[in-house]
Image (cartoon, rainbow, N blue to C red; front, side, top):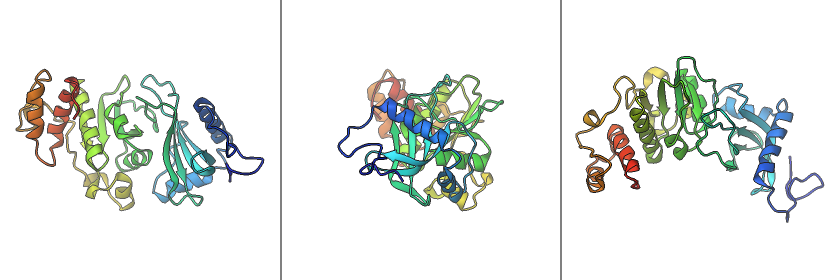
Length: 283
């Protein structure tokens, strides 16, 4: 265990400043690559959650991942996000685990450096162009186990809403997080895909939990119903009984937002959010 407070082997002295981000990113990746065969506890974390190691070169396992805030090291996962052209983002995503790998550590999940507009490619781009996208790494792995889709992780609700799909994408399944933020992000991405004429569907977890919980409870793909079907792309005319005006009419857009049901239909919300963005209005 690395102790960041004491000992000659400490990485950061108690009074030392944080290292430069680029240095910390490089050091974390190098250590994970060196210790990959000794990092069994992070793999145990996945197994406990019913998930398999995807064997992805962009998901690394670290036996003693340093965290400056808690001033110690934890077993952990390091994800290496990539931009739409396949190049590595400057930052990384870290998941800190308890010493027995039974759950996340108090340090939780943290970004280090910029991961804007990047996603973790947990699986290779499929030949048929059908890609899945989710927020978290565990959600993406669980969705793959449930549906067999090649699912990438956008790492946050904002990352999912802004997801940049690669060339060759023919269809996208959005595995939404439960809750308002997750559903809104999924609806925003769906609207962008509709505008690009890319068939898409939104699938939400059962019982308002998450896909990993569903997997551990024995759920199957047949238990789910897409909230927006890839075979019937959402359009203004069919998505809702509330007319969604053009983005050049802000007052009418605001009136349409106020007329949404509570909770709103994802189809209606999808179209409206996209037009609010075009009008440069905050949802």
